[in-house]
Amino acid sequence: MMKKLFLVFCFTLLVFSGGPGSAQDSLDPNAAERLALAQKMHEIRPINIQVEDIIQQMAQRYPEDKRAVFTTRMMEVFDKKALTDISVKAMADTFTVAELKKMIDFHGSPEGNAISEKMPVYQGLVEPELVKKIDKALMVIRTGDPAP
Image (cartoon, rainbow, N blue to C red; front, top):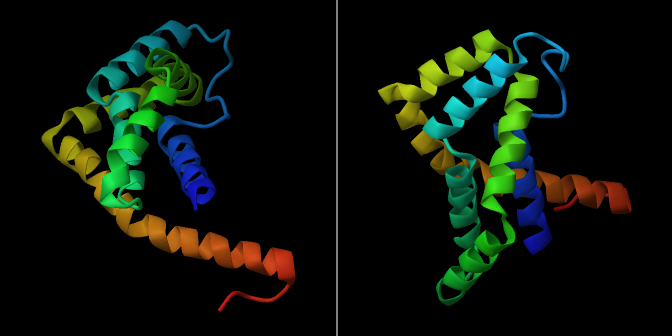
């Protein structure tokens, strides 16, 4: 169960922090501007808060008396500065100047902020179904028979 939750957690991080693709070449004259915009975006919506939200969601799957220990241990694993540096760089490498400006406009607005705050609720509703679908797919792959 922990492995599945960790996989969902990693998938969520990938989705919301950018991916391996690059919007521009690293020699692009806009690289410094993209980096500055990515840092501004992280001031509005820090990756650490997103990680904490995800960990809190994951903790709900544990008995109440084990949640605090789980949350504390998970947060101890993360080097917040390193995670922020990775996320800022990934964002700067992935998105264009125009895209970053739109992200800042959106997430800096009251509506964008409200949507961002509701995303963990949305993810909490979708995650259990996603885990079920992943389990079913894994069962088919392992046995050739669909899970019940």
